[in-house]
Image (cartoon, rainbow, N blue to C red):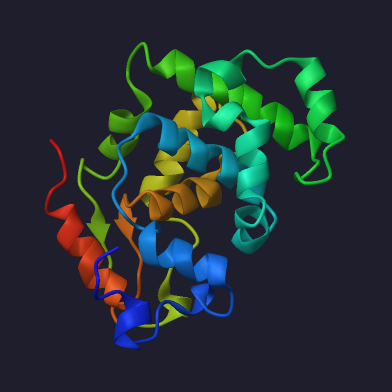
Length: 203
């Protein structure tokens, strides 16, 4: 985060991040920043799988527990998980104990690893936004969509490749988190900061 972030300027950040220190820190340093690292991308994919039907606040507060349970978000290690690991995680109260989502996360790890043989997950994902962030200019929270045609197309592609719990809404949440779209409100200082970062998008 640059030194002129929301906390320093006193200008309101995006409303969804207010009222919770962890959410504010995530908003100010991670959300919307263009991301190209496969392992961190997989981390968001796991977390967003568990977000389906829940709030991001709930998932974010369990992030470190998920990190421990999912082998520091190493996709190859998670791809090797089996019934014993699912049983272990179902008994872990620090996690979101949803068997279908746990099994989906493991299946997604296997699909993710398979994609690394080609096409690689990260550049393939970015191809759905033309290889560079889509910069929106929303002024009010209600203007921010739950999904877009790009997210719907990507979700269909992921489903075809064996991914689970990654419908259009989850796919769009992933696009927002990893900077494939810039959905900070224009009144939020991070909109301009993230847009400036996008100028260095790798080709």
